[in-house]
Length: 197
Picture 1 (cartoon, helix red, strand yellow):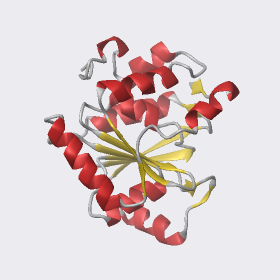
Picture 2 (cartoon, rainbow, N blue to C red; picture 1 turned 90 degrees about the vertical axis):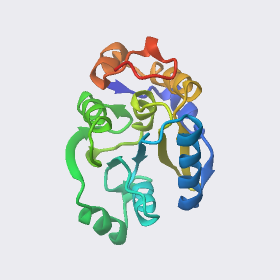
Picture 3 (tube, one colour; picture 1 turned 90 degrees about the horizontal axis):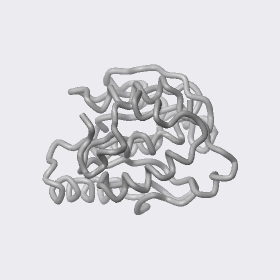
């Protein structure tokens, strides 16, 4: 398991990409990234209940969604909870304590990214750090979307540059990052724009 050291908490407060409150604008930018990277099938990964809800409401089911039933550490409202409960995507349940990345979450994320159909990863605990391994494991041209408290949705276009930034943060976590990469199914030495697989 990887954990966030107190000394790094501030580094995680800065958004890793542009922030928007408009899901349609975000989806248009994601489509642009797929076109620029010549990756028409690149997935959209949503980290968080509110982000997942807004993307679904805008007509785009995320290829992978990680939800924990909370927003800013409070329970999500009933409308979001019932909308996500009604989603018929395949579900995987994992445990992941706050300020950490469990082997269970990493394995589920790696598997979900290679699935043919959308997957919802239901997290008992918190999914707040899951954007990092998603950026590392998603293919070039993908978009990873997560919530920025009090501001909106952050979209990270998966490119060699964003992977390098995510890698630096990921490797600053406490724990065995080499084992975490292995569980996730990526080779950090191959971050030249292509997944290791």
